[in-house]
Length: 490
Image 1 (cartoon, one colour):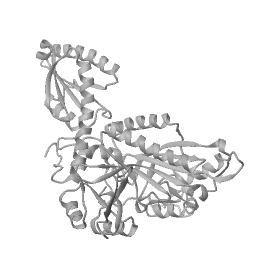
Image 2 (cartoon, helix red, strand yellow; image 1 turned 90 degrees about the horizontal axis):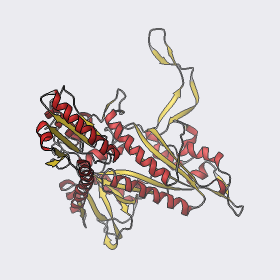
Image 3 (cartoon, helix red, strand yellow; image 1 turned 60 degrees about the vertical axis):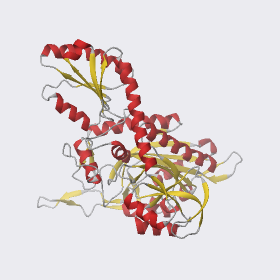
C-alpha cells in the first residue's frame, strides 16, 4: 500500500477509486452518482478537449449548443431510441418551489409543467427537430455540427469517471444527402477517435462494429474503439453511429435533391466522454499513483530544488528560469516547485502520485558540476545528465516516455488476447486470464444474449478488416465465418 492507495492486484476497483481521489482528479458530490472534477483532473480534460476540438474543426466541423431540456414528446417519435434510454431518463415535472409556512421548501403542486421535460441523455431528438428548420435543399447539406455539453443518464451503480449520472462529453451530429456520405463520416470520426486515443492517451484500441444487441439505440450501425484495462476488462472508449434515415423520418427532415426529388436526410452521431479519464488512469497507472503520457500531462516536467541556503536557491532559480524559457518555446510545460513548506522527499512522492512524466532534481553540487538528476515516472529510472543541451534532451525523453507507455499497454493487450475454440475454455479463461477472447459466434442475437447471461461477457466488437475463416460457434456449434472479440467490460 502507498499513500493510502490499496494495491491494484489486491482490489483493482478500490485501487482505481483511491487513486482518482488521492491524485486530486475528482471526488464524490453531494448528489448521489455525480462527481466533482477537481482542477488537476479538469486540466487533463481541457487538454483532451483542445486536441479533439482541433481535430473536429480540421475535418470540417463547427461547434454549436443545444438545450439541456428536451420535450418528452420528442422521444416518442423514434421508438427504438426511446426504448434504449427510457430507464435512464431524469424527468422535470414542475417549475417552482414554495415555502410551506413551516420553514420547509416544497414543490409547488400548482406549478406542474404541461409537458414534462427530459434532461438530455443524448441530443439526437432535439437536434433533428432543429435540423428540420435548417434543411430544405441539397445546398444546405452537409451539416457538420459538434457540441461540448453535459448529459444525464440515471445510473444505479456508479463509479467516478467510468459511469456517473452526469458526465461531460462531446456529441457530433451530422446530416448528409446520401448514405455513402454518412457512412464515410461515421468511419472518418472513428479514425479520429482511434488516432486521439492511441497517440495522446497512449492506449491501443481495436476498431470494430457493434453487434445488433450492442448498437446505439436508433442506429443502423455503431462503430467503436475498444481498449483493454490492466485488470483484463474492456472499456468502450468511443463510438460513431450511422443512423440511416431513422431520425430524419421521425422528425420529417427532407431535402430537395439537384434533380428536384424530395428525400429524407441521412444522419450520423458520434461521441467520447470523461470516461476517457477513467481509461487514462486504468490503462497505465500503478500502486504509486498516476502514470500520465506526456501529451496529456498538465505538468510535463517538474523541477525540485535541493538547497540549504537562500543563495543556493537563487542560483538554481536563475538556471531554471533559462531552462523554462527553452522548454516553453518547445511547447513543454514545466513547474518549478520552490515551496519551503515541504521537503524534497515529500515533493517527489507528490509528483509521483500525480503522474508527472519527468522530475528534475537540482542541488548545489549539481550547479557546481553542471548536471541535473532526471527521474522518469513510467520506468522509475534515474540518470544524471549535463545541463548543457538539457532542453533538447528533455524533449526527446518525453517523446520516448510517450512511446514507452503506449508500447507497454500494447504488449499487455497482445499478451491478454486469446483465441478460443470451445465454450468450456471460454468460461475458464474469463476467470483465469481476463482479457479479450477471440472466438467464433453464430451471428444470432439469441446466442450472444445467452453467453452474456451465463458469463457476463459481451461481444465488444466485430473487428474491422477482420480475417475471414471458417469455424464453429463456441456455444451452438453452428458455422461461422469470422471470430469476434468477447470480454467482460466496464
